Image 1: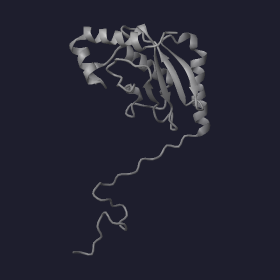
Image 2 (image 1 turned 30 degrees about the horizontal axis):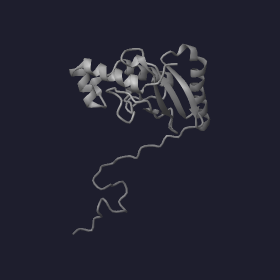
Image 3 (image 1 turned 90 degrees about the horizontal axis):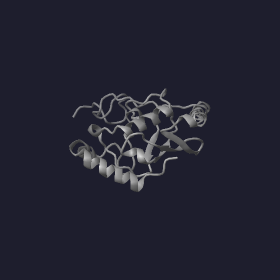
Image 4 (image 1 turned 120 degrees about the vertical axis):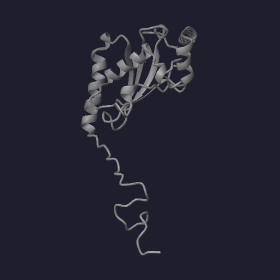
Length: 185
């Protein structure tokens, strides 16, 4: 046995136990004043443009403007017969990290899982940029509701059904809208 120290032991700076030279991810520091101003700006947009926003509306804002309830009113069948409530939570690192979102209204949709989680590409860590505004996020949600993407389904069975038997998919989705959606306001 040689006198060399093992790479995984303390005392060998810069060495790790076989995992290479991974650098820790830097933590994001968000200036609280900038955060509050950005969030207030987002809320103001919804309040000032309420009459122009026909596909979604901001219902409530809580917890220092970080917890939103948004009502989505899709334009295309089968979802256009109802409205769907979503909770949007802005993380402490917003706008450097995307909002977390889930529907509280049940919806039969290939891109929404059984717990209401929705897969909106611009809100993924891969595509999110601080310049993305909340109206962009809401537009992306409406676009996904109006044009489901069965090829990137969270519910593979629903996506497959949409591709193989569209008529059955539309009937089940329309029944779900009738039984579970909210009234459009």
